[in-house]
Length: 323
Ligand SMILES: N[C@@H](CCC[C@H](N)C(=O)O)C(=O)O
Image 1: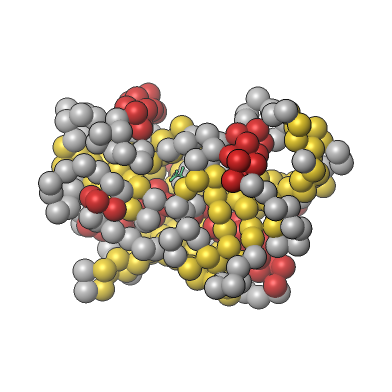
Image 2 (image 1 turned 120 degrees about the vertical axis):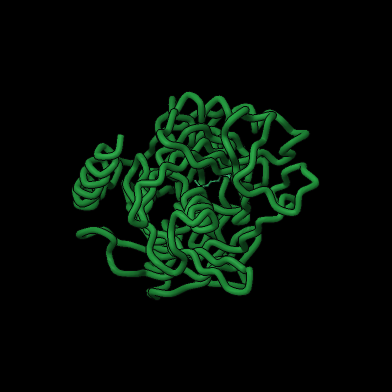
């Protein structure tokens, strides 16, 4: 199988974008799973936190399907959607588009750069639900906000949110990666409690509408950043009165930062996520027997990489101030 790919990232949550708008690859569902496992393998030539298939659709400008490195398909991907937004906006020469995702058609828009020379996109993160059944999280409660889940931790309190992929979020004083990994693995292994698995985030409140978020992603493990997790975490900080609705929340992560705004209207929540959509390189590969062979020299985006280094340096400095 010969595939042209674009390697890109949102907050250094990195993806392999495959354009099925221009091409007609006609991948089977099995192909998609095998492409995800093979191309995302960090030991292989490409590596990534997921695959973004950009496809034709009748109901929106384009359709995004997102597969995790373990081959599972996610309902949504916030950082990935920004990359797809940029790619589709360039294809259609439009700054505002609608992208079909697994559960919703979402508005995406090119917005002012979040940092010098960083092409930035804002995407809608919807539908949002606090109903445990929407994750699903097995419980009799109507909502599970800032409460213990003894099967996962004696002392941490979690909020269950779907956006619409499933998230558990805990506020912490300091992020402990080992503890987060252990809880993430446990939560994803406990199919009685969480039949579809879950993304688990630790959130450190930094004050002044700023937070730091670290996530153990379902189907991946610890990543530099997770867009839907940062959106769900921002909502959690509004629900718990750490941050204000309708105002920008700066969300720092291991790979940079994004800006989230949480809107609350008649008990309904809408979240906007704004951040970078950075291209790394383009190449063509051939996949054979779970092996990747590169057929062309990589076309790299050096200027973008340089600009992003400055953003990353700023974000790292900010994070260090609070460690
Ligand atoms: N990194 C993504 C989320 C990708 C899907 C997630 N691992 C899941 O299975 O729900 C993001 O930026 O939102």
